[in-house]
Length: 410
View 1 (cartoon, one colour):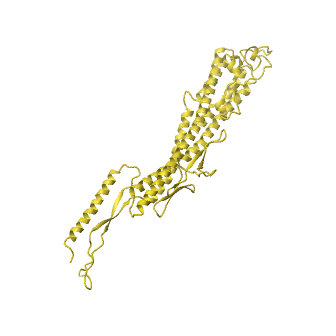
View 2 (cartoon, rainbow, N blue to C red):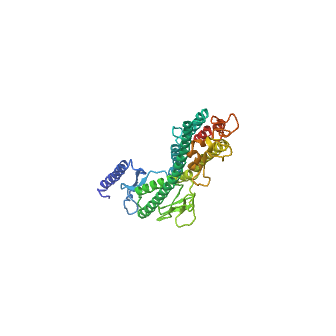
View 3 (spheres, rainbow, N blue to C red):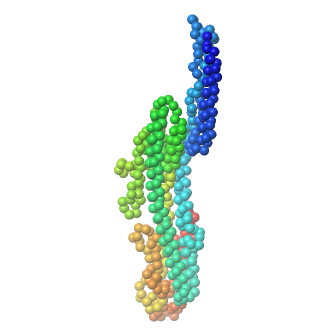
């Protein structure tokens, strides 16, 4: 005959099980805003039933239930969806980084605006147009020189800021790599703690959530693959190379450039020249900005500056300025702009006015014939034919405002 307390025990087991459910519900509510937290649920299972003893067989028609117990506390989490989220998170991280970088480039180029290269170019040609009406006017020549200096300063400023931003990306890249290593260390530490709890038969749900959150943050930085091991630890790899294996972390590092013009590169720490295969994530976005987007637009700017200097110099060299020094026949050709082709900073950052233009307003070659000592009756201080030819260059395809606007539109 069963004890009279068996019914009380069954009720008690139900109360305890439901109390555990209330505790988990409260835990879920308390962590509603916790990043990476997964809702938990109680899995109830019946207690082992009681079989009434007898000489041959039980008197009752079957076993008698003894109540309920908490079989497990599970996380409500879809691993398939989790994997998809990691993949998309890496893609999002890459393009968000590129978007932010291109927005920064837009701010650097500052177009359209009253202080950008486009406006400076228009003001330069407008000053030339004004000078063409009175080629011998000193004040008009001063405005041309001033507007030309403003144009070269605009080129220098934009190019310098672009180069400096490229160098800033190297510093940001080092920070991102440091974050990857830090996350990997934390994941390795959680691996050990999770394994230690799992071997006892318990579910370390909160620790698993913490680890999954770190993995999610890591997936935004780079492309990763995650493989769960039988002991509940995980192995993480980047491009097929292991980053975390249980408690072991294989760190990444940034190798400084060894030659001028080169960029720092990524390496596996202590692995010589082995480069991680970064194909996604914010780090990939930084590399794309540094090695593709910025060099491309900087090359456009350098080519524009070189074309402008070459086209104007070619015409200016044929003309004549004022006075005995620059207006007589047989003087040497004078460049309007100067670019050091060997300077690694690029044409746009080093373009400047020639020393002759800086030293004397008379050096601006507005005339097409000698202004002193010439025999052409149309020559003289009022000759503007060479200047008009320079002005017409503003419609040349590779140095026009429309060409530069096309670069900005891209």
